[in-house]
Amino acid sequence: MNLNNDIVLAAIERRFPGAIVAHSTPYGMLTLETTREHIQDMLHFVKEDPELQVGFLTTLNAVHYPNDAGRELCIVYHLHSMVHNFRFRIKVFFPIADPVIPSATSVWPTANWMERQEYDFFGVQFAGHPDLRRILNVDDLDVFPLRKEYRMEDGTRTDKDDRFFGRDGHEGREFD
Image (cartoon, rainbow, N blue to C red; front, top):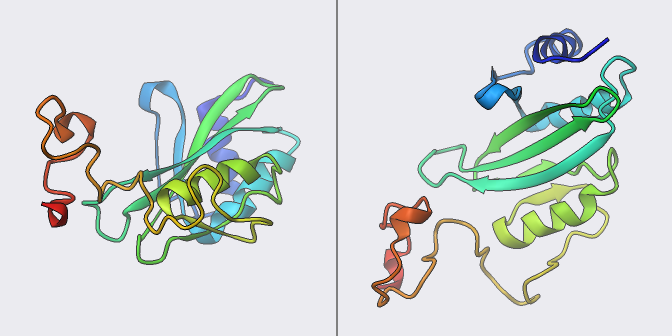
């Protein structure tokens, strides 16, 4: 059997009724949205299910949406079934005031460094992570530099425009 978007969506909906908040297929890739309460069980399911066989976490990354109140942070899991050569992604949105999500390291140990990176740059705290600490920035850095709260460049430079980097130019005004 070859996997497709409909088969994967139906399998997850059967196992987790009501847990999929939204779904779409941008560029033909199935994209599911779920909650922090369901993500760890959902990841275990897609990996262990004999029909799906999603054995590879391609990447895990964070995104900051500063203008989306209550959903400012997002973790995106890019998943791949090598057996079926099928890829899809699962997203989880949560408030920046409560930046905690369960760790995926119990499902995929390779999530360890990916989660450390997202903690380091976005401040996402992965509950249950075996060694959550900064990985690339200095230990005493008290900000999370990839959040869109900070300017990308020195405000005196005229050759850079924050609008080209997904910022409307109003973030970081406290530094003026």
